[in-house]
Image (tube, rainbow, N blue to C red; front, side):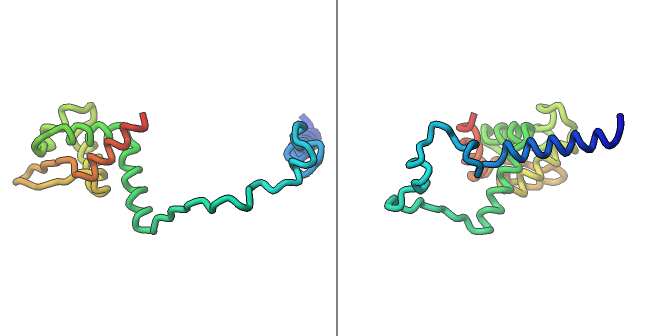
Length: 146
């Protein structure tokens, strides 16, 4: 195919796209809108100001960290498993319940711990894990999304 032809086709596509996306052109406005509707402001000037909740940077970082930690099916299953247990579980008791190997499970547990969703305690060479109160609350909130 001729390179000039390809370039002209791309230019035509760009021109057509630009024309379709031009919202200022009167023919592009919704046909069911009257001239009066078009001239009105979009918002009622007398309406109350919307309530804006602004999280500080620390709160945003913590929330993003927890959401990232919960965004993986394995980590959700780990947190759910730990939340159901009355006592902390040893990593050697957790690993057989998953298809992943121990290093992968330990990696997921570390991410949950760093997000503050699980706690850990070292007993000898073994680590024991449990769901924190924050982890339990986050799990409940995540379950309401489904």
